[in-house]
Length: 365
Ligand SMILES: [Zn+2]
Image (cartoon, rainbow, N blue to C red):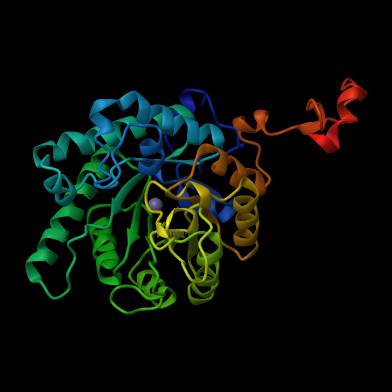
């Protein structure tokens, strides 16, 4: 993993975190020094912004509005992400087949990688390639296994061509599928691999392993970072993370969704909203469950104290969540210039310049 002459030639425009030269493109070196923050959950944020359709969740925005994707990458970096992760989530053969755009497979992957690479190089962040759940993995069906292998092989290939600094294989429900993703990464590249499971209501992978055991096997198969992303909010992901942290020696990843999941409804797909006839809130009615910045900050601190170093927030995360996470680790990303300062508030301010007629009214505000 050669540190690039290229990125050191150009002063990075947004390199807020004093990176030691020479290590800046090496994920493992960065993790050995401290936390690495990775913003995920692009498709949910693009959906909220009106550029992506919930349901299929395929980022056609890569063609329709590449500038919006670029801006979102920049927003997350501004908020404290150390990583620019290529938006190839659900840009695989199977998802494009479902929406009838299989012919766009290659250009759409290349578009995602090109946009992410340009942001990563401009901002001095790590460039991550991305593999995800294929939705066709079936251990009993040899043909599906072949198709999954093809999906991972080709997506790894395009990302390697783009020169990614490391790979993320994410939102995986099956240990078997996760191992296949890892194998594809190992077969075609030498860069580090982060592999994360997404746990539904059951505290078992779909092939019946505890997440701790599944992560242990991934570590054994050569994953550099293992852990969990998506589906579960901080409260219901944390107990599983503790078990994973104890089960493996390698670095652990934690990227919950920013939703208030509960013991009864531990995943964001299972949340029901009492205000609306107890209907399933997923995916576009989740707003009343969104975590506050404080909750994300508490999660970040607790996870870091446990020894978890690869941290982020998944579907539902906005840049404000990433900033809260970064600040919980003592960081001061560019967006922190605008972090709340209530001392100058019209009613609650403590600044001398705030008039008494206003502060006297505080209790009625
Ligand atoms: Zn997610």
